[in-house]
Image (tube, rainbow, N blue to C red; front, side):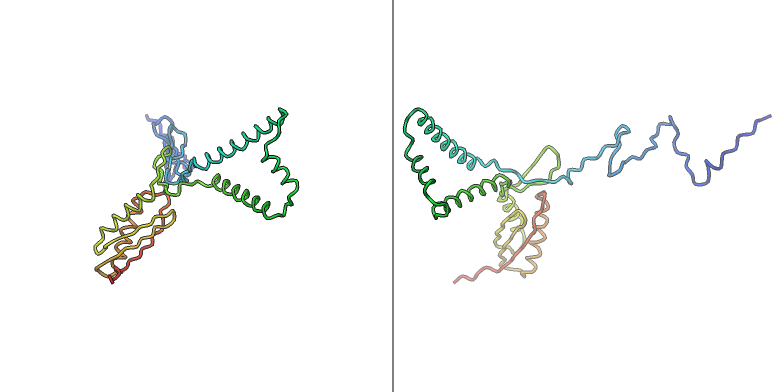
Length: 234
Protein backbone atom coordinates (compact mmCIF):
# COMPACT_ATOMS: atom_id res chain seq x y z
CA UNK A 1 0.00 0.00 0.00
CA UNK A 2 1.49 3.32 -1.09
CA UNK A 3 1.07 6.76 0.43
CA UNK A 4 -0.29 9.35 -2.02
CA UNK A 5 2.05 12.24 -2.85
CA UNK A 6 1.26 15.66 -1.40
CA UNK A 7 -0.25 17.89 -4.07
CA UNK A 8 1.62 21.04 -5.07
CA UNK A 9 0.36 24.39 -3.86
CA UNK A 10 -1.17 26.19 -6.87
CA UNK A 11 -0.34 29.52 -5.28
CA UNK A 12 3.38 28.74 -5.39
CA UNK A 13 3.56 26.95 -8.68
CA UNK A 14 1.78 27.46 -11.89
CA UNK A 15 2.22 27.48 -15.62
CA UNK A 16 5.16 29.55 -16.79
CA UNK A 17 6.72 29.98 -13.35
CA UNK A 18 10.30 29.20 -12.49
CA UNK A 19 10.94 28.04 -8.94
CA UNK A 20 14.50 29.41 -9.25
CA UNK A 21 17.60 27.93 -7.72
CA UNK A 22 17.42 26.80 -4.21
CA UNK A 23 19.97 27.16 -1.48
CA UNK A 24 23.02 24.99 -1.77
CA UNK A 25 22.54 24.13 -5.46
CA UNK A 26 25.79 25.82 -6.48
CA UNK A 27 24.17 28.61 -8.52
CA UNK A 28 23.92 32.34 -7.95
CA UNK A 29 20.43 33.72 -8.12
CA UNK A 30 21.58 37.36 -8.31
CA UNK A 31 22.03 39.43 -11.44
CA UNK A 32 25.38 39.06 -13.15
CA UNK A 33 25.55 42.79 -13.73
CA UNK A 34 24.68 45.43 -11.22
CA UNK A 35 23.20 48.82 -11.85
CA UNK A 36 25.16 51.11 -14.14
CA UNK A 37 27.12 48.28 -15.75
CA UNK A 38 28.53 47.02 -12.47
CA UNK A 39 30.03 43.58 -12.35
CA UNK A 40 29.78 41.16 -9.46
CA UNK A 41 33.02 39.97 -7.91
CA UNK A 42 32.64 37.58 -5.01
CA UNK A 43 29.02 38.61 -4.52
CA UNK A 44 29.95 42.33 -4.13
CA UNK A 45 28.93 44.75 -6.94
CA UNK A 46 31.99 46.48 -8.40
CA UNK A 47 31.86 49.25 -11.00
CA UNK A 48 33.69 48.28 -14.15
CA UNK A 49 36.55 50.53 -15.20
CA UNK A 50 35.82 52.51 -18.36
CA UNK A 51 38.91 54.53 -19.33
CA UNK A 52 37.16 55.98 -22.36
CA UNK A 53 34.72 57.98 -20.25
CA UNK A 54 37.40 59.59 -18.06
CA UNK A 55 37.95 63.28 -18.72
CA UNK A 56 41.37 63.94 -20.18
CA UNK A 57 42.95 67.24 -19.18
CA UNK A 58 45.72 69.17 -20.87
CA UNK A 59 49.31 68.94 -19.73
CA UNK A 60 50.51 71.69 -17.37
CA UNK A 61 53.70 73.54 -18.15
CA UNK A 62 56.37 73.91 -15.48
CA UNK A 63 57.11 77.47 -16.72
CA UNK A 64 60.68 77.55 -15.49
CA UNK A 65 61.61 80.81 -17.23
CA UNK A 66 58.82 83.01 -15.74
CA UNK A 67 59.28 81.40 -12.34
CA UNK A 68 63.04 81.96 -12.44
CA UNK A 69 62.66 85.60 -13.54
CA UNK A 70 60.10 86.32 -10.85
CA UNK A 71 62.16 84.60 -8.16
CA UNK A 72 65.29 86.51 -9.22
CA UNK A 73 63.46 89.85 -9.20
CA UNK A 74 61.90 89.21 -5.79
CA UNK A 75 65.19 87.98 -4.35
CA UNK A 76 67.13 90.99 -5.65
CA UNK A 77 64.52 93.50 -4.48
CA UNK A 78 64.06 92.05 -1.01
CA UNK A 79 67.80 91.55 -0.52
CA UNK A 80 68.56 95.14 -1.47
CA UNK A 81 65.78 96.49 0.73
CA UNK A 82 66.82 94.39 3.73
CA UNK A 83 70.42 95.50 3.32
CA UNK A 84 69.38 99.16 3.26
CA UNK A 85 67.13 98.75 6.30
CA UNK A 86 69.94 97.02 8.21
CA UNK A 87 72.32 99.81 7.24
CA UNK A 88 69.92 102.46 8.55
CA UNK A 89 69.51 100.52 11.80
CA UNK A 90 73.30 100.54 12.12
CA UNK A 91 73.31 104.38 12.07
CA UNK A 92 74.31 104.64 8.44
CA UNK A 93 72.67 106.78 5.79
CA UNK A 94 70.04 105.21 3.57
CA UNK A 95 70.75 104.61 -0.07
CA UNK A 96 70.03 107.44 -2.44
CA UNK A 97 67.45 105.49 -4.43
CA UNK A 98 65.33 104.88 -1.33
CA UNK A 99 65.49 108.53 -0.26
CA UNK A 100 64.55 109.68 -3.75
CA UNK A 101 61.74 107.14 -3.93
CA UNK A 102 60.36 108.22 -0.57
CA UNK A 103 60.51 111.89 -1.56
CA UNK A 104 58.80 111.17 -4.89
CA UNK A 105 56.02 109.22 -3.23
CA UNK A 106 55.51 112.01 -0.72
CA UNK A 107 55.49 114.91 -3.20
CA UNK A 108 54.33 113.51 -6.55
CA UNK A 109 50.53 113.57 -7.10
CA UNK A 110 48.81 110.24 -7.72
CA UNK A 111 47.21 111.39 -10.97
CA UNK A 112 50.51 112.20 -12.66
CA UNK A 113 51.38 110.47 -15.93
CA UNK A 114 54.43 108.70 -14.52
CA UNK A 115 52.52 107.31 -11.53
CA UNK A 116 49.67 106.07 -13.71
CA UNK A 117 52.10 104.49 -16.19
CA UNK A 118 53.96 102.61 -13.44
CA UNK A 119 50.68 101.46 -11.87
CA UNK A 120 49.39 100.23 -15.25
CA UNK A 121 52.63 98.32 -15.86
CA UNK A 122 52.40 96.66 -12.44
CA UNK A 123 48.75 95.72 -13.04
CA UNK A 124 49.58 94.20 -16.43
CA UNK A 125 52.45 92.26 -14.91
CA UNK A 126 50.17 90.91 -12.19
CA UNK A 127 47.51 89.90 -14.73
CA UNK A 128 50.16 88.13 -16.81
CA UNK A 129 51.34 86.18 -13.77
CA UNK A 130 47.74 85.25 -12.90
CA UNK A 131 47.11 84.01 -16.44
CA UNK A 132 50.26 81.89 -16.27
CA UNK A 133 49.14 80.47 -12.93
CA UNK A 134 45.64 79.39 -13.99
CA UNK A 135 46.28 78.19 -17.56
CA UNK A 136 47.83 74.80 -18.39
CA UNK A 137 50.27 75.89 -21.08
CA UNK A 138 52.04 73.38 -23.34
CA UNK A 139 49.81 74.28 -26.28
CA UNK A 140 52.04 72.25 -28.55
CA UNK A 141 51.09 68.94 -26.89
CA UNK A 142 47.72 67.35 -27.68
CA UNK A 143 46.40 64.97 -24.99
CA UNK A 144 45.62 61.44 -26.14
CA UNK A 145 42.97 59.00 -24.98
CA UNK A 146 43.78 57.23 -21.74
CA UNK A 147 43.69 53.46 -22.09
CA UNK A 148 45.09 53.02 -18.57
CA UNK A 149 44.18 55.20 -15.58
CA UNK A 150 47.83 55.53 -14.49
CA UNK A 151 49.31 56.45 -17.88
CA UNK A 152 48.98 59.79 -19.67
CA UNK A 153 50.20 60.33 -23.22
CA UNK A 154 50.45 63.36 -25.45
CA UNK A 155 51.22 63.96 -29.12
CA UNK A 156 53.24 66.89 -30.39
CA UNK A 157 51.45 69.07 -32.92
CA UNK A 158 54.33 69.02 -35.37
CA UNK A 159 54.44 65.21 -35.24
CA UNK A 160 50.70 65.02 -35.84
CA UNK A 161 50.95 67.45 -38.76
CA UNK A 162 53.79 65.41 -40.28
CA UNK A 163 51.83 62.15 -39.96
CA UNK A 164 48.74 63.69 -41.58
CA UNK A 165 50.83 65.26 -44.33
CA UNK A 166 52.33 61.87 -45.21
CA UNK A 167 48.84 60.39 -45.37
CA UNK A 168 47.61 63.17 -47.64
CA UNK A 169 50.58 62.82 -50.01
CA UNK A 170 49.48 59.26 -50.72
CA UNK A 171 46.32 60.51 -52.45
CA UNK A 172 46.52 60.37 -56.23
CA UNK A 173 46.80 63.81 -57.79
CA UNK A 174 48.26 65.59 -54.76
CA UNK A 175 51.44 67.50 -55.53
CA UNK A 176 52.07 69.21 -52.19
CA UNK A 177 50.33 69.55 -48.84
CA UNK A 178 50.53 71.99 -45.94
CA UNK A 179 48.98 70.85 -42.64
CA UNK A 180 48.48 73.04 -39.61
CA UNK A 181 47.28 71.21 -36.49
CA UNK A 182 45.58 73.16 -33.72
CA UNK A 183 43.82 72.15 -30.54
CA UNK A 184 40.36 72.41 -32.16
CA UNK A 185 40.97 72.37 -35.91
CA UNK A 186 43.22 70.82 -38.54
CA UNK A 187 43.66 73.06 -41.58
CA UNK A 188 44.89 71.34 -44.74
CA UNK A 189 45.85 73.08 -47.96
CA UNK A 190 46.74 70.79 -50.84
CA UNK A 191 47.86 71.44 -54.41
CA UNK A 192 46.68 69.05 -57.12
CA UNK A 193 48.16 69.03 -60.62
CA UNK A 194 45.70 66.56 -62.15
CA UNK A 195 42.33 64.94 -61.44
CA UNK A 196 39.20 66.97 -60.66
CA UNK A 197 39.56 69.10 -57.54
CA UNK A 198 36.33 67.80 -55.99
CA UNK A 199 37.53 64.20 -56.28
CA UNK A 200 40.91 65.05 -54.79
CA UNK A 201 39.27 67.01 -51.97
CA UNK A 202 36.96 64.10 -51.15
CA UNK A 203 39.81 61.60 -51.13
CA UNK A 204 42.00 63.84 -48.98
CA UNK A 205 39.16 64.42 -46.53
CA UNK A 206 38.42 60.70 -46.22
CA UNK A 207 42.08 59.79 -45.76
CA UNK A 208 42.72 62.49 -43.16
CA UNK A 209 39.51 61.75 -41.28
CA UNK A 210 40.73 58.19 -40.82
CA UNK A 211 44.21 59.48 -39.99
CA UNK A 212 42.91 61.80 -37.26
CA UNK A 213 40.94 58.94 -35.75
CA UNK A 214 44.08 56.77 -35.73
CA UNK A 215 46.06 59.42 -33.84
CA UNK A 216 44.13 58.49 -30.69
CA UNK A 217 43.51 62.05 -29.54
CA UNK A 218 41.19 62.65 -26.60
CA UNK A 219 39.37 65.44 -28.45
CA UNK A 220 39.72 64.90 -32.21
CA UNK A 221 39.92 68.29 -33.96
CA UNK A 222 37.69 69.35 -36.82
CA UNK A 223 39.04 69.05 -40.34
CA UNK A 224 39.04 71.68 -43.07
CA UNK A 225 40.46 70.83 -46.51
CA UNK A 226 41.30 73.21 -49.32
CA UNK A 227 42.56 71.99 -52.69
CA UNK A 228 43.88 74.34 -55.39
CA UNK A 229 45.71 74.15 -58.66
CA UNK A 230 49.40 75.07 -58.77
CA UNK A 231 49.98 78.72 -59.53
CA UNK A 232 51.07 79.40 -63.10
CA UNK A 233 54.71 80.24 -63.45
CA UNK A 234 55.28 83.72 -64.82
